Amino acid sequence: MRRKGLASMAAQTVASTTDTPNAPAAPAAPPVDLGPAVALSCRECGERTPLSPSFACASCFGPLEAAYELPTGDPEALRKAIEAGPESIWRYAPLLPVPADVAAKPNLNPGFTRLVKADRLAAELGVTGELYVKDDSGNPTHSFKDRVVAIAVEAARAFGFTTLSCSSTGNLAGAVGAAAARAGLRSCVFIPHDLEQGKVVMAAVYGGDVVAIEGTYDDVNRFCSELIGDPIGEGWGFTNVNLRPYYAEGSKTLAYEICEQLGWRIPDQIVIPVASGSQLTKIDKGLQELIKVGLVEEKPYRIIAAQAEGCSPVSAAYKAGHDVVRPVKPDTIVKSLAIGNPADGPYVLDIARRTGGAVEDVTDEQVVEGIKLLARTEGIFAETAGGVTVGVAKKLLEAGVLDPAATTVVINTGDGLKTLDAVAATSGPTATIRPSLEAFRAAGLSAH
Ligand SMILES: *Cc1c(COP(=O)(O)O)cnc(C)c1O
Ligand SMILES: [Zn+2]
Image (cartoon, rainbow, N blue to C red; front, top):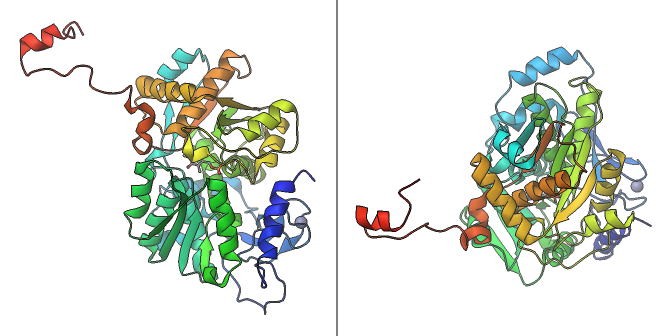
């Protein structure tokens, strides 16, 4: 019952097609090599199904996820192998649904972005413990989406797809366009018509097709589900729909990197932005796996989910004590997080509650304030989603919900250059003058 949103989405897809992606009737497919991933398993009923481009359980319509045979050997040997690996997400290939030779294929080598010790931001926020910003704007197309798309490309190759597609709030479209160009695949991506110019241009420049849909992201997503069920969509891998169980796993690498960069230790508190909630649930999964394979010591950690007030269905459910996330119509400058019907919303609630974390939202004004605070204190120009996590960290520190003495990581998932409009009105020249000392003196800036 509580998974109503998801179940109806899956049911809709099944109803619109004669040959569903989950039909068991197909002849035995050739074995697929996706490294340690051995099957898909249902997150609701646990039923297993072979690796395939499916996303919903045939028995209960629950979402499918990759299931692994994780390394069981000496953790010290695994740690050494990882540390000697490439400076990208591929150093964690033994924990990802990718073939062992993945790094040798043409790809964008995302990940291994910097973890910045943010002492000046800490001082400003009254944090006495260690505060870090995981800055994923350093990825090849300047958002965390390069991580998930790189995994989806491997799944697309394994399943023989020739076109890479997605429904996107902006960053995903750019990541898909670039990764497809590099891999030699066709791309066709779908976006809402009202995105920031930086994101539209970034999606189109790689030469793939970009289709703007007159509607919200949730309309775009519904349309893509229909496309998958139609012959038009044959041979198409939708990173965040039929390849979602693979794609989503890419977010685990954020957890792996944060822990490795902290000297193989789990932080006490992590603040994560939430659109569909996929990234947050996989960061939690990544932490659990690191504990399981013995790369980090088990310890309590708190997961904090961050949303923009103008699209805060998960935060609203959390505050009301609900298990069900009621869809909303987004109205916020934070377009990258503007998903009104988040597929992983209920799981985000579970994780926030299980870890003693929280779900919180901030206004658009607080988002802008967060962007400027991070820029002013640490020299990091975040996109609006980064303004959300910084804003939520600030709000929860002030409310006494976050522990100021703990080790805290705030994630910045994208680059401020893609969302210039958010700060353009308040970030211009301090003065415009003639090129003379007299004019400069008159501007009153010489005392600086
Ligand atoms: C996609 C995206 C997220 C998170 O997306 P989920 O759907 O919750 O995984 C966060 N920040 C940015 C900038 C994004 O583009
Ligand atoms: Zn199931």
